[in-house]
Length: 164
Image (cartoon, rainbow, N blue to C red; front, side, top):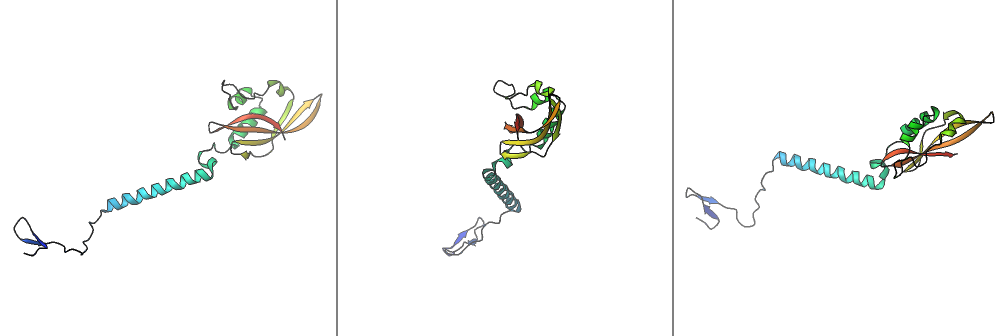
């Protein structure tokens, strides 16, 4: 027996690899390879998602589109529904609307028409153009206003009215 051989249980010599010769690495199972690929894909997807959220923060974690709340606010203003307007308004720490719409304003509003889609000013504020017609001393007067929407806890809420 040579110095590169070892003895097996049965007493026969089994050759051992000589120094400097490469042995084949143990073969990995397909399950391990598949799990590694899936894990790598998920980690890559997570990195790309977090990078995208850093570059464009409002996209991944923002309140979404303000169009639905703009339409709801316009409908509530048309119907003179103070309950709905209070429900969709931004709330202060006391739980009350930050800028409640005075119900007396409804006595002078004779018509409300949407004047366009909501548009973002910044990530946390949007404006919805609305054309009001107010009647003052028997005369109708057009008043173009914007419904100002703000973000509160990742949802849109009504902040108030502002002239255009």
